[in-house]
Length: 209
Image 1 (tube, rainbow, N blue to C red):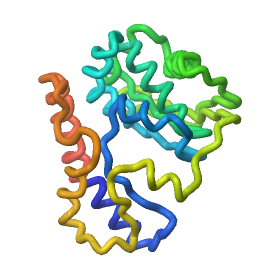
Image 2: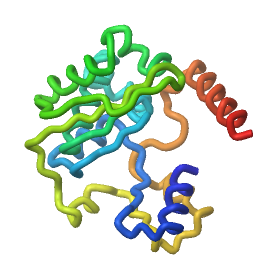
Image 3: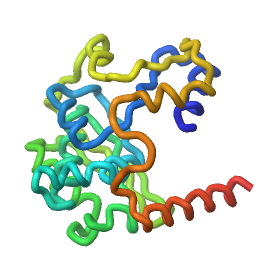
């Protein structure tokens, strides 16, 4: 539904400089993409914990505890762009992290150190209360040079969807399910994850009314 909504607005606003690559990322996929940054600015709003959830078994395969795996994942994500707008959720998401790190800033700095990156700028751009306290951070690394726009397309396995894509919105499910990476419910999804997801869906339904 998120891809359908995005594509609908691309068509309505005729945004020819915006594309969608319907892929589901995990730790190993991101590691493969870090040979050269993808872009100047990467916006990750409430998505890191989803990637983290589907990556737990990959951390274990590399002999990493969950906290170490999450920090390494975040560091690998930082290598993908020269600047980042990043939001990390509060408890109960990433609860393993908040048992170790007193704040998102501490976790971000640990990830930068793990990746061997030195931020040239780092500051909070927004903070609010929504299912706990959420901070949106701006982190910038001055010495990363992204790939060219032409080379960027070669880094994705899924076909790019644009405002000119002829594909009907109702046919997007097949495209998304054929994308590289994991789709559907993660293998590591727990009963607690399902309960929290159901609470969020119910809250969204009530809010929509």
